[in-house]
Length: 129
Image 1 (spheres, rainbow, N blue to C red):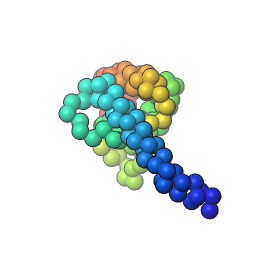
Image 2: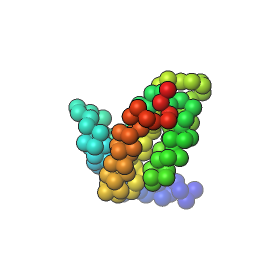
Image 3: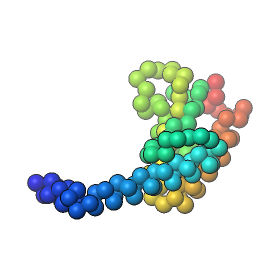
Image 4: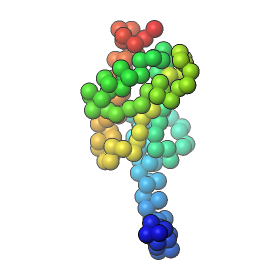
């Protein structure tokens, strides 16, 4: 009952709209930063709170990749977590744009991720098939 009262007050006072607009601006800034770091052009959908990065040929190695990234301070979710089929060749990494809190932390994390992925896609990666 208290939650409904609080929510009702936020909506009727206009505060809920302000909070939503602030969250939307944060998402837009985070998506622009992602696009800049990963050199993505003409992306019109800037309201996403997470992005996916293709990682073909990594099916079955998701936990290893997540563990490596976590050792670098990056929390991520490999598509192995979401897949119901074994051996799915459409593997990807799901990256949250909203959990870093500050845009500076997001920038640092995305740069670490980009460096990792650059090395990862090289021939020497143990996860490539």
